[in-house]
Length: 78
Image 1 (cartoon, rainbow, N blue to C red):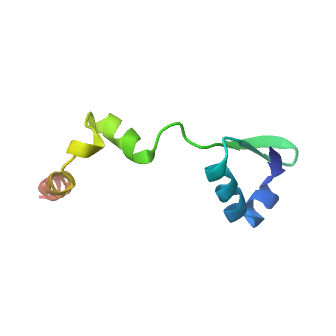
Image 2: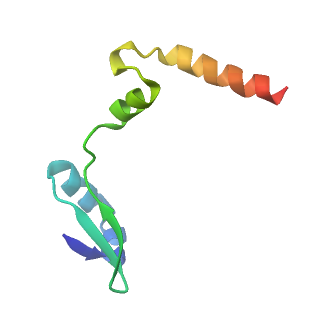
């Protein structure tokens, strides 16, 4: 589906609902030029994060991740 940036901005919620329900992609134009393509991701954000970390979502210890991130942040600040 092709639509203008103004139409997309005005009805953002409607188009997000539409994307979650279908496999259709949106082509957004401004002044007749393609500026963006929006589609449903092939994988979830949690799965992508797990792939980046090299872990599966089931064995990620989020408390440990938070502890390590804060530890690195505050050690580098000293």
